[in-house]
Amino acid sequence: MVGPTREEATSGRGYRPLAIAFVALVAISGATVALQAKASLLVVALSTLGGVLVGLALVLYFRWAFGL
Image (cartoon, rainbow, N blue to C red; front, top):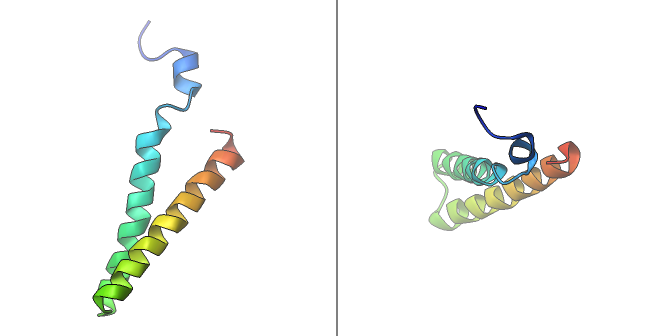
């Protein structure tokens, strides 16, 4: 047999790196928008933190909505 078993494929352990990358992408997106607007360092930091919180909320919603 090639590839993971059905239990390994649906266990959810493989979603953690994808969730971390998704949260990082949303956080970096918030920071780059603030940088392009020539915001102060405090605003860039706050937008990064906001991006992390929004990314975490989206990951939790996706896990709930799709049963991951």
